[in-house]
Length: 505
Image 1 (spheres, rainbow, N blue to C red):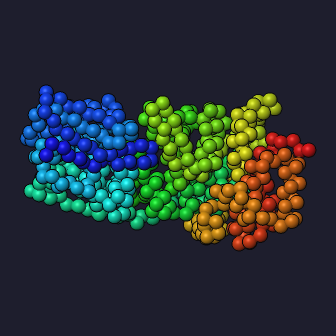
Image 2: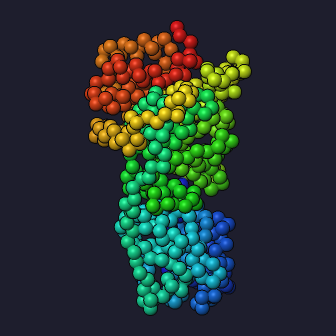
Image 3: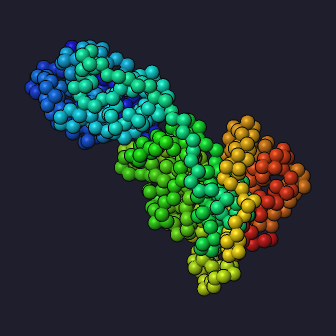
């Protein structure tokens, strides 16, 4: 047999397209060539594969060895093709029985002694292989990750000789079947620990119930970060599909996956010195950034005006679409970024504007410049902007026996989310314009109230629709079908920057 084909997979963004590793043995001067748009790292496989085959006691074929990674127009990188290339050579040189590895996929880099090393993006490959009804051979270090995929047939490829012994029938490997762990989401921070701040806690509940973006504005030490940290616990537990998507992003980013808490929603808090590349992702071979690592979870930006203007502006697209596209000269990759955005900021550069216990030394011009670091289009995309004032010491000292726990509020939010999913198939914040007109239809009095406020404070069309969507969520929390004046009033009261920064007519 002078030719053989072994299956593997590439990793391109959040996809794992099938790659056919075709090996041809031909007459002529000894030569080992790898073609098919392989990058430098893949071409280095020639030396690793040749050394591994020799050191494992197998024979190297005479003549010309040509390896084609098909399809040729798909960029390939990393050492993941070492194992399938080595197996293809052994098949083509008849050191392995023909068709012994049919309907199987192989991934992994080979060390010089034939051991199979770990690789990134195994989870994506496992999902795609399961859909194709293929079994997979993965490095031992990646087995737990691949086993997250329900129904995936997995064998541990510890070394090249182990896989060859399996293919020849001398020592068959044991297959395990993947099953998603049934682990509950954990609650690390409870809402009842937050003293006072009833308006802010109400805004947090509304944001969680409708997946709305939220901005806290207040002096230092008033509990803005503490409130934001309680949001993941209020959100419904991720489904298996959502948890797999989150785990896949971490796999591509080469981050560990905690299977004991894998249904807990992510909470990402990048530092304000983070660049736009750190936030959205990038690199010569695009990798996900913080917004993708917050997929199906919460992205919290503390000290929002301190971030670079360019870094904040790149958030506008994913806030609307839930995805981010990264384009490079040779690559274009799309990563998921459907996150709930929460931010916090001080009212002025020193932080004490309007604080009864602090003295603000900022001029009006300094305050204006500080707030102008946030562009109008970005503020327009924030559903709620809430003032978080300082709580009296007496309130902080005295425990509140009536304070609701995270579990209590989360149960209420869960029921509201179920209503939204049954009604429109998504949370209220994700409603499209045509759906807003149909599902967020207020009473005549409520519509007149909103129109008056929109004219007075110069609402944009986007801000107008966001008020309606928040009002829809407030009505859902009240278990009311039609949006009324009370719901619209509360939605507008929770948009402080509309009133603070725009002159009334």
